[in-house]
Image: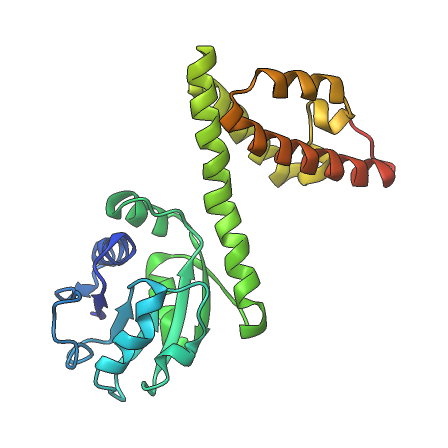
Amino acid sequence: MKSIRVVGDGKLGGALCNALSKMSWRIERPLGRTDDLQSAAHGVDILAITTPDRAIASVARQIEPLEETLVVHLSGALTLEVLSPHPRRASMHPLASIPNRELGARRLLDKCSIAVAGDRGVLKIVEALRANSFEINDDNRALYHATACIAANHVTLIASQIERLSELCGVPKAAYLNMAKESIDNVLTMGAAQSLTGPASRGDFETINMHIDVLPIEEKELYETLAKATAELAARRNKGGNKCD
């Protein structure tokens, strides 16, 4: 039976432990900021540091290095340099939205994609989660993580605007969010440019200006920015001879 301990028992650490416990891993007591971390790597196969990025290097320095224990961080942005005191080190970053431990555990077990680097022992976690893994080199790591943040946070930001405006116009937000899901499905099938619809994709700036006129002032900037970007994507698509209504 494989064993793991996490340092940083937040949403991600808790989700990882919950998921691995369902796959018959032994989960040792998680450690937090008030614990003595020197012996954290003792008695486990894998020690996972799931703290915020800014704390990972400091946490790693407090832990006694052991030849037999793999130390893993779960940052998408940081390289393995932050784990340099440890002879066996790796990173894994799940491309999954983890808003809480319970839902996060389910998503980690639902054919999740995980970026990995370093010691191949980290693949034991990937295999236990029945996940898909891919490697990211250091040169592309910041760009990789920026893209992950766009996928998770920017989409959520747009959804928050949908929530606010749907309430103002008295339409159930689920109706709009279902439309958003359909747009994602279209992108998966056809690509982003071919999935564009609506006035910005057609160059219908009269309608866009009408929208801007009726939007609350605090909602205008985001709408204008996204409408401009949508029109630019449509122009690139149409220049390539793939006009769509």
